[in-house]
Image 1: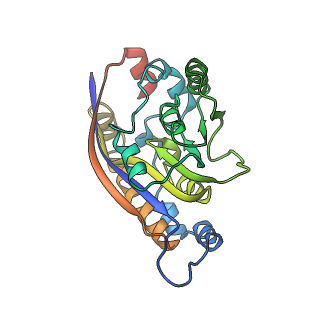
Image 2 (image 1 turned 180 degrees about the vertical axis):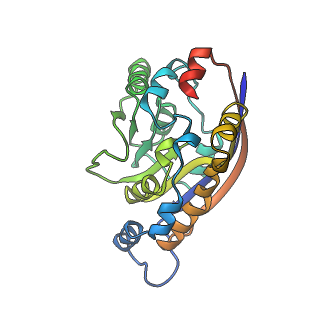
Image 3 (image 1 turned 30 degrees about the horizontal axis):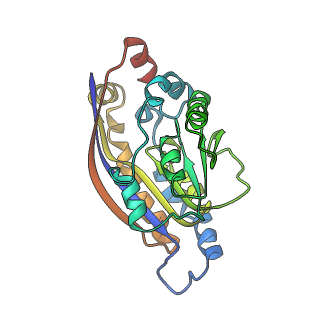
Length: 253
């Protein structure tokens, strides 16, 4: 059994802004597109640190675990509680769930939103999400199998979430997320993620790349601040215990 420990930060952004020059949604979108290149370049998670998270095959192999996870509840889940705290979603809201996986957060959000769209790179995850959608009889959720960065969206959403997804592995993904939201954006990702096996492998192969995920936190803040958006950040500790077969471990690591 390996243990993954993550201190997780949640960034909530809203189109409330600082300074006199940012007085419309369009100007904020323009500023996001023009995010300083040095910030975007600094936020690049090396493949060795990603541990295969950005490959569809990794998630295809893991689908049996993720399809059995319970749907989080608004009463117990800290990420959903953050969304509820800011009254971000009601029965008129459209929501985009980036890196939706087996759809557990999409289904939770669908209980309060008018419509939810989930997108994920893994065909097996989307298949599992659609199976559960049919099983539960939920009609206001749609799932798309595609790479978030490559997908050509034809609309923007009232709320966009990205919960622990490798789609937010660099500034390009984060910036695209922000350009797709009309009102709110919520992300959850590790501030510093440790894995007893992966950390040992990284230390042996690329010791200079240890804890490279740390750069995402200040980068997110700077991208938002530069766009005139004041981010709100909260933090909570989380620990996951996973048991993997040798075959699964070889694929994962």
